[in-house]
Length: 203
Picture 1 (cartoon, rainbow, N blue to C red):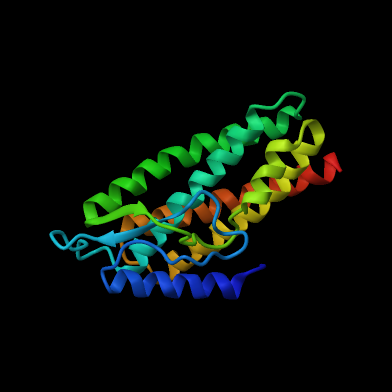
Picture 2 (picture 1 turned 30 degrees about the horizontal axis):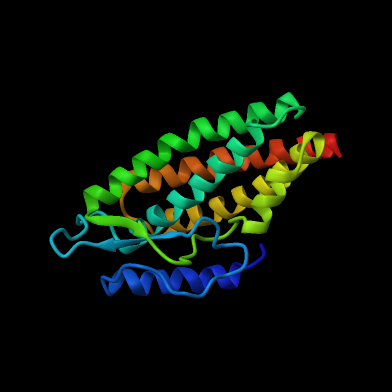
């Protein structure tokens, strides 16, 4: 996957910031991973994360929230268009319906763990994020072109989410977070296969 080493470096940086109790992000951006300003998790001095939520759990949750938010934004962009294959709009509707509740659940976890999600300048969210140019291209596309672009972008986006979720399965400790990660791997792997099939049929 492209930018894997860069994404790993970003994860490491995020971990160091979390360990130091810092909030906010750096001023540098990584191409393809800085859409929408960004956010990071910081731990309150008054409320340390619960014992069963480790650094890996907080990192996964704080990075998956904006990742999901972008998927919802991509789905909304597609659903606002006319002339798109109904199979693709149905998939976009399913993605939005699944991921919006997960965003709210993860936001609740961060609150419970005392790790507030705050705005950051250029903080990176992991593999598969679309760039500003990518999002503008999707916004400008129409009809079958929009359908194909959405599918190709969302395949990449899902692959990044699966990679992040697998890291949580391997390294996380919180039972709820690990269970969500397992669900993401299963659901989005199946959706990748569905989107690849749709893309081949629309090409």
